[in-house]
Image 1 (cartoon, rainbow, N blue to C red):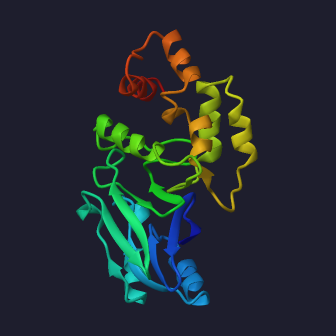
Image 2 (image 1 turned 180 degrees about the horizontal axis):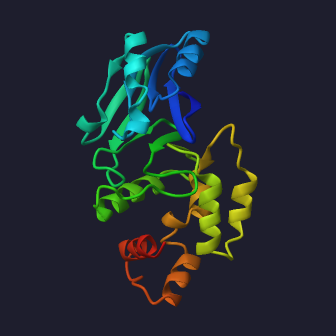
Image 3 (image 1 turned 90 degrees about the vertical axis):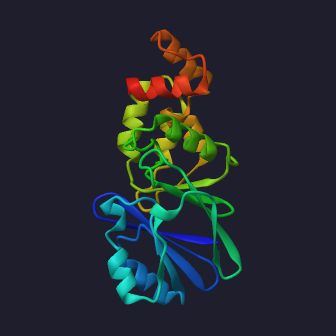
Length: 232
């Protein structure tokens, strides 16, 4: 399974995930760029879908559906694990509520398309209001192999690392993370995130020590996550 990233608007990131001949456009705001790439590489866009239903992610749906024969998959209808076939390869989809109630993540063998659930360097706002659901979604993602590549919904890397320095000023991995930043391709590994993304570091001893100095709850994983979210 392959993936091509398309930057559109100011910092939005859309994707074409594809196999030998068939592909799925995800959060495809850069319509003409995606169509051009698909035509050049003889990829039939079989599906159009989104990581969640916020307009900055769905803005390209209508244009793509008008210019292709693609089938629309409504992320709002995905409530449990589903499978999408591209040629003979499998793309998994699972419900990851938290940022929004309808947020989903797409999983290939070695990468994830995470939308606004897990960014490269930070996480999304909990607009759903269900912090526990958000925590469970993130827990599922960070339990995957550490070499899994993360493709998020926006390029917030520089701003995120500035915040990370405020949260964990002694974290040596933040500078390493910044050095890897390439605005032409926003991708990290899960291991990168667990080392530098403060919001998913609720099990890191350095973060636990940081929270304990602030006299906030740290007795459970969720308590630590909640404390991080409340403070920062």
